[in-house]
Length: 458
Image (cartoon, rainbow, N blue to C red; front, side):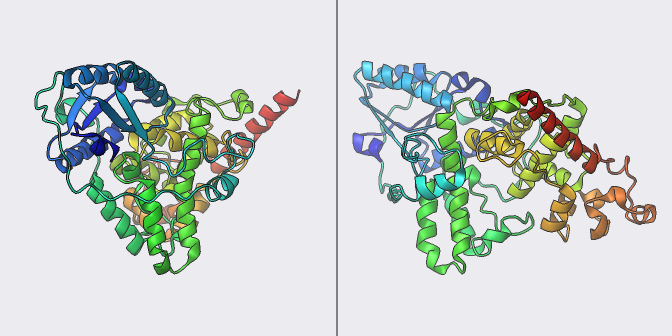
């Protein structure tokens, strides 16, 4: 809105892989971005101008070329973007250009939701209950402008088409499920569908991957197609229609976890690369390229883990409960460094978000903020039986096990040979043998954790 009020608008998008370096967006996110830019350009009557390269240099050139007096943007909070935007701000101000930045992606600024002593929270619940809910109410969304006056610069040096950005992945193609449709209009449709059909029963249903209680809003949030303010206030507007208050509160907490992750990243910029708890620097991670690749491709021989990893590969998404199970299997049963998993998710998720991805992987690994203790190891067999008891989710993504009775679906290695034969399964041929024995690998992880503590205390 500040841009529209400043005068005629020249909307631009810059794909800045140069400053992003190791944190340039991954393949699945690039797929989403391609379609999101197409939708955005359509909503702007084809006036969006596309650039690629160092945003610091590009904006300086554009200001000189167009004579622009004001540059506006929504603030970003990834460490590399903060450093880059400071350079942009300083350069533009030196050139006499007014700079307006606004918060469009967080409910609370990272410097607002702090402890009384001014330090950031490292435990989620007090962050949410004290730092957020006791802070100012998130502002209400403003209405979309009725009319936009565009600047008439049809020919700009170095401008590209969306297709010039080469955002479509070449090694695989995301399928349409779960009904992906990037863009602002579709984000609103997704929100309304969730509030009409998914919010009731959310508190418990969110844990069941075959249920309809997932919002699927995360990629829309990731790319700014919908704001957390719109979600927060839409939920409040509909709250009188929600049967159980716990469902609404749990969904708000999920939105707030994203805020918590950004709060951590803003105050701890090396969160994506370094253990938040330094004691884990001494942990004995294993190097196992073959096991890592099997995990990536959903060929671990552990059905619920394979279902999740295949969902990820096929759709660019994974149900949150299964994300935790698959991540726990990698870092604890396989004892492979959490950063390997974070890199794979970064490349394969359409909602890959540096703050969420980093904080969540550190949480599962036990080395992050408010982390699950390292000795808390998800049992994938138990998790499958509890949260996919009818096998709808697992059979969908691991069809070679479709004929296996529910009793053996999550532990086919224990099934009698005659049961496997009737189901058409030959372990090691039609479906992999388990990479590891769950009980033995669990104990190996606990021993490694104990050894780490012993070395530190000696």
